Amino acid sequence: MTGGWEDSPGYTDEQKAEDTRLRALVRDLSITVSTHPYWATLQGGDVVAARMALKHHPDVLPSPAGA
Image (cartoon, rainbow, N blue to C red; front, side):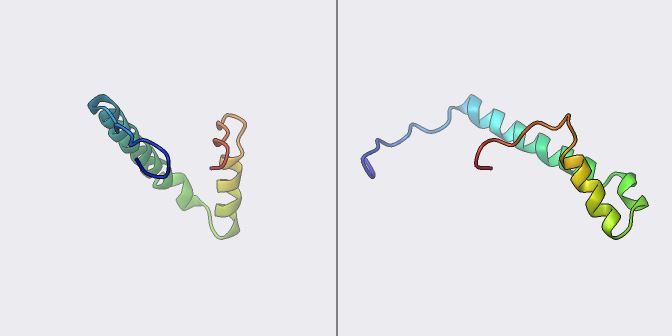
């Protein structure tokens, strides 16, 4: 026991596999978006404006609290 809390049993094998799958999906989607040819059509401040517009698009899910 550390700090008044019992040790966590940790992730199950299924949870570990799902975590790995989701991390790979996020990585692959991030690469897809960041290397899309669209970004090569923008220069300077236009890149920042386009990224902010994408970040604040109404279809984007809100970030979890504290993230």
